Image 1 (cartoon, rainbow, N blue to C red):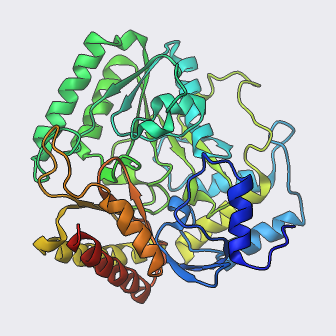
Image 2: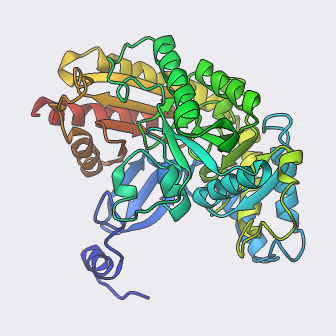
Length: 442
């Protein structure tokens, strides 16, 4: 145990012994969390609009979830998945079957989103006998060696790590800023352009017969919180069906009620062949998974899948409780109500030209505010360069944890899905006051 008489001593110890490659929003120590708030060693109590980057969807230390995990700890903690089934694993499947897309009925649970993404690539390559994977510009799928090659949101994630996994090709995603268009660009124009570019990728870079999968986040996360248009997902589904390409949806950050649907793909009605999930599934306990068509997953030979801690019993028990809470506490209804309040408040801010907000977007409680009107032209420097990081830092000083995202000036809202009306209003008020202060002086 670290013996320290003050939070500053704890921070100094961490700065000395924790790897420098790990970034932090604040130099403090989280001591406890309850609901929508965290308490720091310094004594500060902060409203948490990060939820551990979309993980503690039901708030910190939800009593039913924590109790389920504690009870499981007294039964069996590590029931290794290659030895036998364990009950929480099977119970979780029974809870998820009614809410995943119909036709996806075969599961495998892992620990992190990146591991599940890598497993989805392995399945696609094994099932098709092809190597190449197409990913989206602005995508984030992880920082492990395999997923680094699929991640195209920031170069920091791959800096100094080349050569990356081969066989990965990038295609444009319909997001106005990446396409060099104004914020009010027509969706059809963007989708048509991106589908045309994808057709060129398949004719110029990776032949369909060499392409195992197309992978996409149904809401681009680290690339700027941009929902994939329904018509774009429909176009991907059509191309994959025509060429026998596996369509993989990454719902790691946008799944489990985050967008107001159990999974974000429900907004489009498009079904993938494989779906990857993690984060909110277990409210902070390490758990991820894939679900897919039985015919696809059953092509994997016994022993080709596995992992020491994969589908941990305690994490699965917590996830079962999460599924029950989602239903019992009407979480999706709360998301719908709070989402309307959040969008109304942010759009009101956008109408104020002094705030220089160019876009308010997202779904449910996965919402982005982008700053810098007029910065969309290719090669044009954003006059508000660095403002998102300044806002995030200043909000923390004022009692609100909130994060930036992407290479653009974007702040993302990911509050708990069961946040109250008053808590949401409190966070929005802090955000508005900070934006007035920071952008007004930029």
